[in-house]
Image (tube, rainbow, N blue to C red; front, side, top):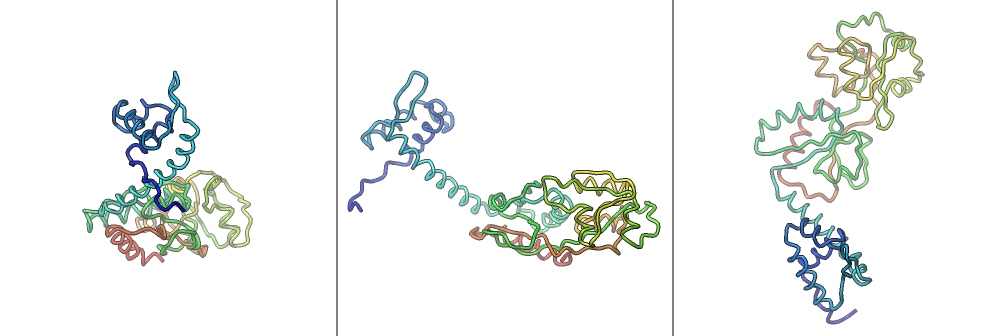
Length: 301
């Protein structure tokens, strides 16, 4: 190892160099960095003087990296990206009163939003930003302070605490003529509201019936929606019988909007968990939100 390594160039010129190398233009780099093109040129000249070799070959329509410039860019770009990520994390942690939660549309609508109203009343200085998507992944979860994930509770790189168990049963309008439903065969004779789960992980009638060892062979009418919220609204309007998740259907049942056919209640053994990155340093606002949400969910487990 070299005993007296030469000092690194100043960071400012390196930032300008990375922007020019990435955009291929002094003008575009200047616009991105909110400085003049002349200032960018001076920073590049300063870096070239420091290193002792040219970094760009000036062309009629822009610039091209020299061979040493290309090698420098390959090393500098990931280092600067890492620095940007670190600064972003520090800023995010320092902002004590803002946090973000990513979850599915159904969890956001039926579980999180009703609770957030009460949370904001108790903690008006804390802002909770909710990102709803049905394309959840552990990588996406790590980009936010918290996520609500469905499963067995084990995800690489994430730590979690259980919010509520998955309980699923048929629901329909309180005015719907259910009649005497004593068996799954009776249930299959009713108009059923199916969920198209292509492209995302959610149970539909095929999956639900399989838990009881029954095939999905409906004798009655079947209509299909690609969102569970649409299926529940269709059931509420009297169009048929849909699958209802306890965390979604409970409030609708208590308001008299739908009724449950609870003799066929299914506990899948899976749950929804509040998770965060293992290495995340939770801010005070994050700890307050986590503890409050877990306490408010005690009765749902």
